[in-house]
Length: 233
Image 1 (spheres, rainbow, N blue to C red):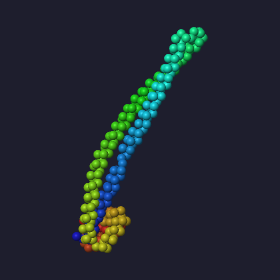
Image 2: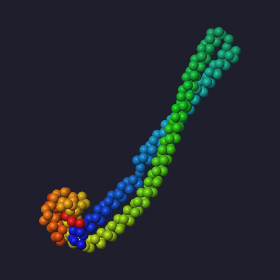
Image 3: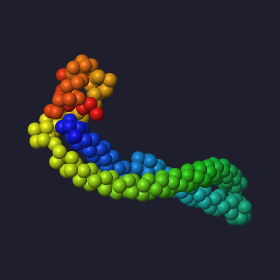
């Protein structure tokens, strides 16, 4: 195995490990919470608060109507009970009764409106609760799947680290130093494959002599444009 080949094998392991750790970070983020569940929970809390206010409005409207009804009953007893005989007083009582009836009708209409509104709020509350339950169920299913994937990835990273130790045994110290420096400065890709007589990373073309050098020279050969180590494959 050539020195470039040993480095390319090391890069494959390192890139696979990078991908595994990136996915582990993503899984950990997903396991911390769900945007869908958070949104559904906010909607459910709002629906509950709206429903509570709706019930309070119904109770208030019913109490107002009941109070007005009691006033009307008292006025009607005075009007029709025979205790008042003065025509002027009877006329005033009659006017009061009519006024109380009109206001009672308004209050009863208002109570009916609040009850109809409450029915709508109850429907919205039921839908919000169902949406939250559905989102939480989906989250549980997703979390179970993610937890399983996480365990597999952790096992994979352990395997990759073990394979990396084996691969390192075939890498010269100075080659490893160059590889590490390039890997840090080149976004993780220290080596590039030679493809169609060109650098597989930056695309610059190489002469036939340069390609032959990449294939035959024992020490690593670097791309004259991007600086990566070239590997003929």
